[in-house]
Image (cartoon, rainbow, N blue to C red; front, side):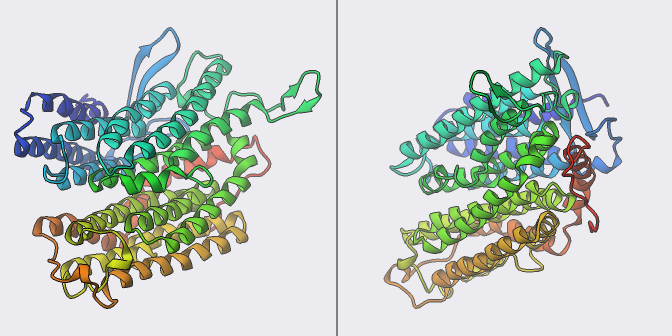
Length: 519
């Protein structure tokens, strides 16, 4: 029908953010209802696009898109307005719509001051994150990538506990530093292409030289221009995921931020670094990614084990969940750096699965804190009899978080482990240690809250409200559904993943990884 659906996906939350300013500040019910309506409309549109992808024609080229929009933007510098939706970005975009809808559903005037400001920032952030997932032109991608930081800064700096200022500043400094390096690399790619274009499809395979740079006068050989550019992109994406040692902003920020923010921040924003590696790192720098994959995979394994050990050592519920998230994000990173179809496809599946699980866990933490007034696990126990409905839903989330077969995270982790074994069995064995540790800290968390003898703080605690149960129930249902039937995510993503892996393992390098035995 010649309707620019991808632009509409961006326009709905952006327009909602602007129209929201016409509603009086004191009309809290209207503000929340309007925000829910805007996020719900976006979610319905995105889910319809994903559901109808199989019936659309794929655009020609090394990276085929099911939906695509191309327009001239700034012809003087070769920047274009190029949006695309393929199997890799489809389910992540659906996750994006879902977590922002959840954020709108659970926010309330009672728990959030200046509700109008919060709702406006939430909708603006959704626009920016959707733009990151849809952009094919590098300058357009960078615009949304940096633009996302503006509403995030205000929402993180204005909402949360007394430590939010320091935590937000650390996050912003990390992110801006990585983004500046990426911008320099984008400029280098555009200049080196000689085509006056920043479009990913025109830059595939990498236009930068693969000849090592020699420092004049010192006779010192350094990395190639392509490798330098890849490292600049990798820094920006590794900070956002984050990967150890770029992770130090994460636990402080997660501890200080309120639950409605964490639902979309932990559920989606931290996954954008992983998406960036898949979309741009693997396709623009095939030689560089094959050179550094061993180191990056080792850092991913380090993140898995370090995050799990730190989760075991924490007593604050938010920090336990934060470090568990770091460990699970390490699995996603490991799958990407295997450069195998199994590994990358498992990473895409796990991005969706982890977004569902982490959102549910933070909502549960918020309910426990609201009911008991504390997040210290040493003061919380014996909630099973006092909060039976929360106990049941928390049990499902616990089993999903530890990777129980039949739950959603198992399919993604299994595929990632296959890819890791194809890269080298040592990576798979070390990642397996992380699986064992995940069982330890997740069961410790569940047992500590639910089964140990009751503490004074848990006496007389009431179960969660019906509205909270109605938010958690669909998340736990998805954990089970995607556990027993993960094909909808994997089958849609796989063709695009295979194309991306072919580009990443192009003949430019002699270290290509075979993908034999892919299920």
